[in-house]
Each structure stands twice: as C-alpha cells, then as structure tokens.
Image (cartoon, rainbow, N blue to C red; front, top):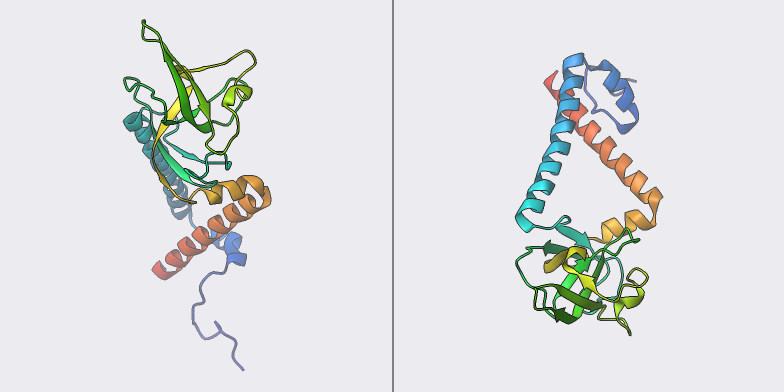
Length: 198
C-alpha cells in the first residue's frame, strides 16, 4: 500500500504545519512576507488618515454601540461622519460627541441650540429612544455641549455592519480566535503559493 505523498504527489500545507514551513523559508521569502504585512498595515493607516483629512473628523467611521438612537440607528450600524467646522450645528442633526471623562463617543440628536451674538454655540442632545436629555451624561456641572466636543455628524450609515466590532468587544475570546484564524488562513495561502512556485 502506498501512502499519499509517497509517490511524489504534493499535498498543500496544512494549518498545523505552518511553523515547520516557515522554518523552511529562505531569508528572502521571509523578508517578502514581513514586507507584505507591513505594506498592508501602512496602506490601512494611509486610508484612515486620508479619510480623516477628507471628512474633517478625527473618527470618520464609528459603530453605534447602544439602542439609544432607535429607530433612526440600531446597535451595530456603521456611521459615516463629517465634521467641517464652518457648518453650523442645528436642532435635529445627529452628532457624535465626546464627553470629558468618557472614552467612548456618544451618538445622539441635537434637540436645542443656543447661539450667542459672538458666534459661540452651545447645544443639548438626547437619544431618540431615551426619556430624558443627555445632561446626566455630560461631565459634572456641564449643561451644554460646545462645538469642540463634536467628533462628527452622521452623513450616512450601513445597517448592522458594525456587529462584528461589537461581538469582538463583548467576547474577547472571539477576537483572539478570529485574529488567529485570519493569520493562519493567510499564512496557509501564502505557503501554498510558495510551494506552487517551487
């Protein structure tokens, strides 16, 4: 009886033998893989920085993390933001803002705007699905938000696309597993390509 692979047939690399295959790579192939990974990371960073410049927002894409804006936006919706300083803030507009002492930005609707003669604007927000305004969310003693608190204004959205982000934050083991799966699949694919070239 002849075992598979004994007569010169080539079996593709399995996910379990990745480290053995990595050790078989010559320096040039290994440098190529490192460079490839660095190019992917730098391309992603350049795209993100480009979006920041184009939109004027420090965070041009955010995920809705709660149901406080239902029915307008649901948990897991991906929002596209702009934040052009010359655009005035108006009641009814949906803004994403940061409050001092909180790490995560909040997505809520502007319900009241106070504009002074000198051009200063203060405004109050509320989630569509909430009973009361957001004064309880602001830092202690703060009753109004200012333009400096705004991260961006919602200009569009993709429903539920951000659920992957929420799942990875709610279940850290899923995040680790997903990262490992992606890394293994990428390496298996690359190693299979290398074996085909040999």
